[in-house]
Image 1 (tube, helix red, strand yellow):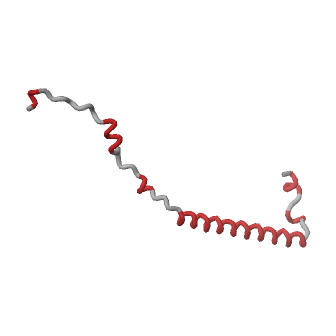
Image 2 (cartoon, helix red, strand yellow):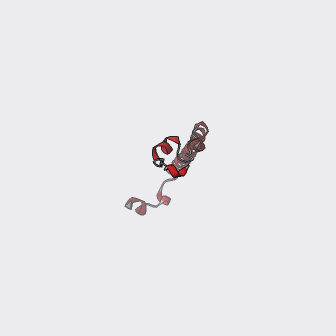
Image 3 (cartoon, one colour):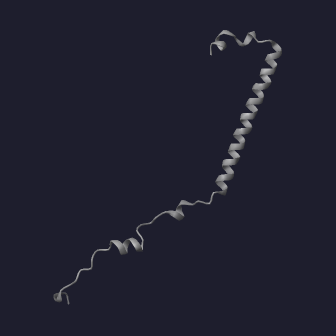
Length: 81
């Protein structure tokens, strides 16, 4: 931490500056290639994914729920006829 404040980039020799420039270029190129690879991987996974939420959407209670929760049948008396 303190080393970066004490030694300025101008103090570095020209030959090492060329090497550092090449290493910066290589690291930026590696990051770019990695970003492109992750984008392609995500695109491939999205295309391969067959999950469609509209197929799994529940539209309300089904017949089992209605059979379980239906009200008790009311028995009508003789005056209902």
